[in-house]
Length: 292
Image (cartoon, rainbow, N blue to C red; front, side, top):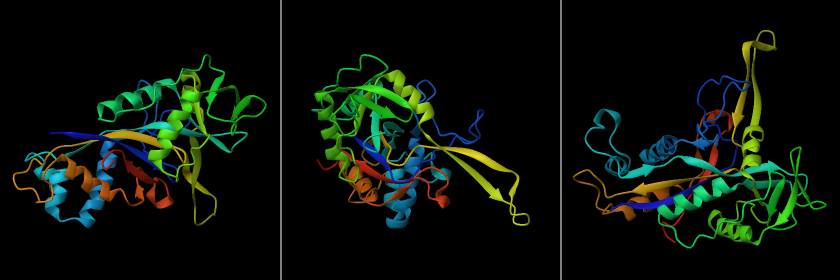
């Protein structure tokens, strides 16, 4: 029997799930969904990071049962854990008032609700009424509002109070914990406005390498790198089954035990994506509903 649970990733530093060389003005862009342009962290990256940590903490039999055999023995059986991609849920955007907002949109929140319910969560709040226009922003309070407007980067939106959105802010805050400064910062934007921010509000960093002899930029060593900003919230779905190998460890009797073992690994600060040596990708991972 399979057991599912959503998980969150809270970026504690800029996150770079790279896709190699870009073709536009950004040399090293982040991974994005082809159809929507929404940034994501591949499930294979999540699995790889947790597997590497498990190898340092567990005996080899448990690692193999949960994550599967090494590559040369991959044909023998699958691992008991299945990691879905982590897609952006809340994008932190600089705000004129309140420092920054957590922006989301009807499409993103609707998909999160659908996938969470398929993963077994119940009693999620109802979806808020979508903003009536691209210039409207639904808010949960006055923290981001100045003269009836919300100013994000160089954009201005007409503020519209939304009680339905407050239920989502409370629901998310309860599960993300006090480490996420969500109170009165949740902002519900039109899908078109959100699409624009996903293209323009991610972090672009200029990186260089200095020639040790001349102390100037080395030839060809100037590039632009895109990152998912610090404080971003991503979500995915984690599934587990009973181990497939014929002699799993005694404490792995079923899917619930597999999820409990993985949850133990998430009690540490994890590093996802590239550029670990310059501090990118430090994150918290939270499993929802393993021990509700």
